[in-house]
Length: 108
Length: 119
Image (cartoon, rainbow over the protein chains, first blue to last red):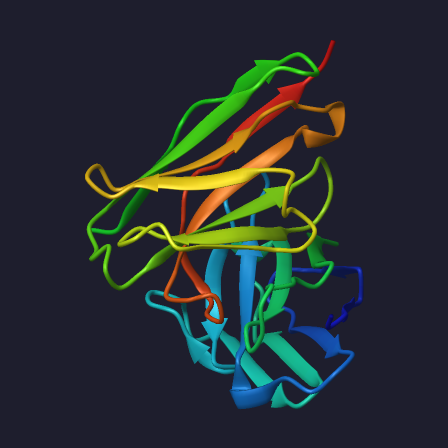
């Protein structure tokens, strides 16, 4: 079973700063089948990115995804107050699905 | 509009049974599956399994096989997650989510059902 390592565990930033979140897989993810989700406290997760770099409907363009094989990155170009949340990566090239442990983006 | 509406919070005792629901609307039941995802307090997301509303074909994560039962009623567009005998370790938030297949991302999510198991 694939193991996902997200880093850092917590990212402390001020609004307007750039956020770079990493997701590393223990084996290659085929077909660019990797998604990112955002979860705010007390809310359900929300799909942000699929296919490594395609933004889901309604997701602002300050969010971008990149990477291939075992190394993937979610970038928030300028963090807005509403972006403080936990972010999870998820490859979906195999079943059962697994999620990374998450990166918390908090206000500095 | 795609909607997944889950049943309300539950408080149960160890050993009791429970069935929670997820009502789907706004999309074709012959195209999508419904997944269940567990989130234990303060922890990350765990995919439990998936059911096809069209014919109730079900796939489980090995970690949850035999621990829960996933079922569905196509006529009402409702998916269910049930336990025969709850344990304290089943205390968690449970989300349902729409998935096109077992190897696909989760594009719409229900609001979650909090299950608390305590004596």
